[in-house]
Image (cartoon, rainbow, N blue to C red):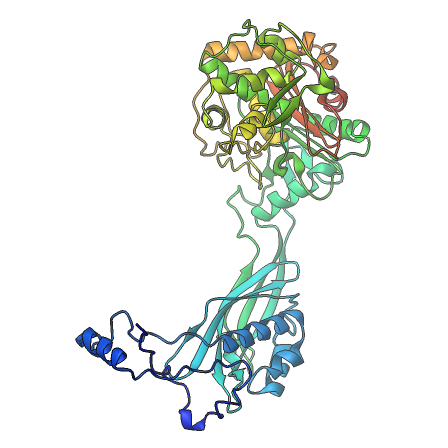
Length: 558
């Protein structure tokens, strides 16, 4: 049965003023004729009072926004954002004043290319359409000035839609009497010190330059400024619309920001990266295992991205420390359990060992020391899909917010999507992610049996919640990490003094790119981890780097 059509939407012009039906305006849909059949009348009568009350399945609700109006609003915002101000002005009811205002609005505000994002439109019964939007105005050297406004649009006599121009659409507080002014200011550079109040600078320790800048900014140093609403005539400030720069953090008087960085460890890390990274991207973190205090953060290159604490890498076989913990906690294996290590194992895709090695009849401890991928993958059914990730979070703090004093990525071990993903996660691939910070912390937890949240600021301990490892599990982890140095893939560290334990890793990036090399180690209460991008293997690239650091720092210094 044909359904009755609604009457034309409120706010639309009288049909008598519309063009003839055979010459429709471009972009406008022709409205179907109102049904007057007996069937339609019967259906309407059957609905009874529902229609009279304004509700029911065919009731007329709020009008829908006209697509042509929404398109015009979006085009106006696109032109404005791209700097096509004449074109943006032409889309308004007052092209000249609109162009002039848009051009002058940012004068003196030092604003770069704005980002203007439209929100869903609404229509009013008076025939107007409103498109709200968010403006993000980047102020040079300070940050983003973000605010909300809206565009009113009205249908014109020729059937087109225009932005109904008004100063307030550019910013709700912009008017004929008020405008905006940028005020800049700076605070004195904040001094940053390390262990023993030793001064730290990016000149002496290049890798610390971004760290020092971040710590100084958090303490109230660096550029500051504000966008002020001012009277056009008098220049009097009426309100602060946006403020930039961090309020000074509480510290003793005007004293320095004290950190946990140890100049001896930092200098050794900087030197090792300079001599052993061979032009490759590399990073290293050293920390005190018993407290979580970060002793060194080093990157190569030293400028730019702090991959040591913010990088997101597949940690490769260094993650087998976590996988082994999950297996040992569940009594799924013992170090002496025979777990065969074939060259290949297929779980959705073919997995293999480094250099296609195999160790038939190997024990689980040997699989760990030789970093056998296929052996670890063969044990995947011993663990539930979520267990490795849960162990990583519960005992190693992975995925929790560490708040080390500067922005950091604190690891991720999400549940696998399928069995292939699970197989990859067993060996630190797939969705598992970490960086030298997280892997140094994992080595520290293995060494001490208890997670201590890493930090750059002495006396802070964060909010991560973990449980201590059972003593027998921690003992077996330490024994396997020690054997990796004496008899396994980390033999490159065996000539150094001290009780050293380690786990190497070789992480695949893609079929075309070379592998990343990893090592996570501990000695005498210090944990250290390093990654070398494109380093081929942990033994070949990361172990020599950590060897140089440990050789440069006397054994027993903590």
